[in-house]
Image 1: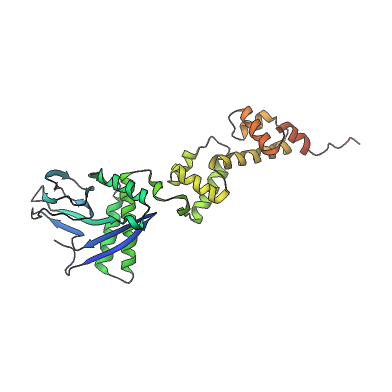
Image 2: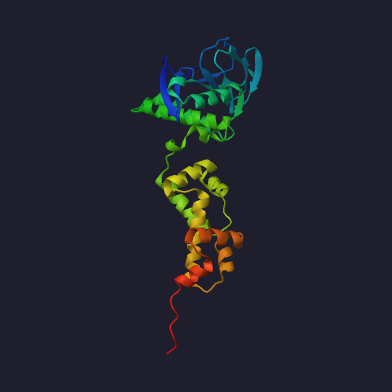
Length: 296
């Protein structure tokens, strides 16, 4: 059955990175059935069918695809398709969302790349149930139609399609060019905290990316926005500053300071230090140490 007592349809435009996407939602957004009453049809849009519960057979261009809970089926433009439920005694529930990429309003190369990914994919699996969560929330907004529900639906469409693109291609930072990167005060604070806590250890950009749930290229873009340098450059800068502190405030030998500050070899430490300060670590200590007081 359809979710809505009264016919409902909504066509909206949303933007993800440099992609402009038209989304069409109607009363068939969420349907439950155990009947095989769908008839073959096609349309110019992509259609995403998300199996919320149960099982069913999707028939696309004459080929049958068995779909299970949390499976996501992509139907490409102009493909004839219909469905037949696998178990008449166990109704299945599914979400249907149609969308198309507007090439004139999108980055042409990016739009082509996304279409290639979509056209080469038929079946995906949303193991974490993220899309289902957003779909349920969007359905609630449509059903309640409270003040601002159109804005909420548009936001959920962005989240749903972003998750879809992540399933298609995990490294989706190409969706968000460097001039589009935005980051919150939390992310700034988190990166500062990670550097302060880990810069003396054997830390890598992969560790930061995993902790922040971002790609390495995204980490570097944020680093350039925050500090004007790459992750590696910032890490080296912080280690050299600590080396300067130890050279001028302790009697530790430069070789020990090298390893205490996170460098893996003395030649590398020596080269980096000399490039940054114009002299060797030993010469820097000699030049910046306080004169020894003569014995009275």
